[in-house]
Image (cartoon, rainbow, N blue to C red):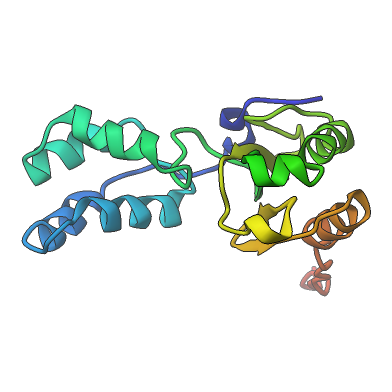
Length: 178
């Protein structure tokens, strides 16, 4: 059952108490907005709406400028995402090499559509309009790695690897004798 990305991160700490110090340290450097947005995304996994006025005020730019940068770059989400982000290229070169069939397959495999997160919070599926891998389409990006010539079978293998987590077994603590 699909969920919105927002529901997948109920336990995400979205406190921005640390952000004013980051803004203060970065504001004298050239082009501080993108590095600050990357820091927020790296720390929280998305850009919360409360960060926009803080960035605008701290960098002395408009909220519209901040929001424009966030909405322009596909790496910045304004809602929490799943533990894994799967981006499927929808550019013409990938479409010509079977991208539409791959899109349909991944949506069926995960049981979600673009801009949704699986119910277990494991995968957020996103369209992207070029991964710069045009000669080897169809292409996908899974987390920080780009893959080309992706077939249904290769996609299954990539997802299986990403979704497999090692099991950590903790030894039982002995209770003190009463």
